[in-house]
Image (cartoon, rainbow, N blue to C red; front, side, top):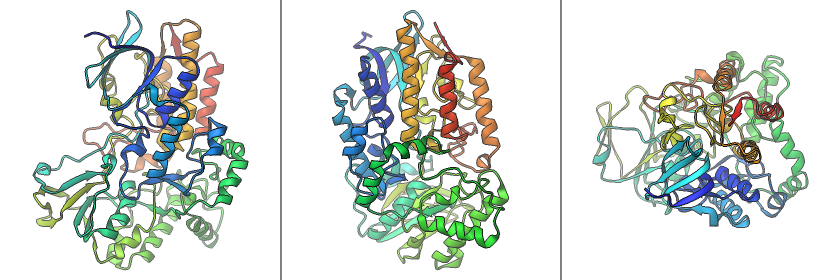
Length: 533
């Protein structure tokens, strides 16, 4: 096959990570292009168009910080960015910085092979293009490969099937229709209240109840927006110096047992009234001590019991199998209130899983549940799914997927040993999904760009991660995780939602501030853990 294009840098994905990476590359004169399988930018916010989709980080935080002009000119309308607003923002950024001319839409990367003879990657697309590049950057996202369970009979269903992670551009009309939805994670919690408003009947199939906190979503008052803009530098620094990259959530100072029961519940109540994830930042030990965690978990369960009228139903909605915060914490608008509606039915499939999909519904425990439309709110093959969807081979014909058979191994979530000039933005063993994503994206892109510039300016042929430092980082990542309650949950953080996936706790939960300090020190220490040739 003939090479169609020669690039310095090929970037996979036109979400917030890919766009910022392209911006940095163009700024420094690299011949760089993005290849994106969708027909527009936005990544997560391009694909996740389901009813009620919005970010769980407040919009003034969940935004780029690299351009002061961009910060000042863009006016967020909502407290939490909704999917339409976030997609509009992504397109605004794309247009403002003239990125579109370097983006190849409707093009999927299917294979990449490193050639040691010329230290270049040979990359193949689904339309048989062959591109040669020196630097290969995966900006593929942590939650971008939808997981549709392999349920018997799924091809027999005669109605419409939707997945929240691959929602159609034209919003389906559920008016007068009976809808079945499988899954009560974040996308289920957001979409169920909206679908229930128009559907004739909604059947919610729940395997595991999740903790969900009230978002307290609203329009963003102009005075709040203006105040933030005046002091944006202060808020950005607060975010960088926090554990999760959110300015308002600074590290707590006291244990849950430094106060009595009455005072503790007052603190929880204040956080509940504030909304968002505030409860989890009430005390120092909520994610490290099971007894402390249980005080917060039971507070939330009692809120569910007070909200849901049917007491038996309320108990089915109360999570009992994992500490609060150890699975992706959901934020909702009237989720539990929705179960008081006459047209909403919860079907508990924890003890009696779905047997099969039939032409007009599904069967479970010798009962048939009939519906017109089926919605999968079943999440993603998180953190590794999009990377493993590409056949990535090093010069010895070893695939990255095979290297990750027993779980991903990376150095800082940025590179993988034996795969030169291959970079990942917010990869496994980085804060990624356990942080404000755009903050982590910017930090990662800046760090990767420093590595690439150092490689270029010194006329090195390639850069790669050392195996020793990579192994040490993986051990450190696991030690940090095991010092918390996170591994106790059956969650996609561990890969538990994907059949056959080796269980590993993938995100780095040592905090974004600590992680950034480690990366900065590595640059000062002459790129410790990286080798150049």
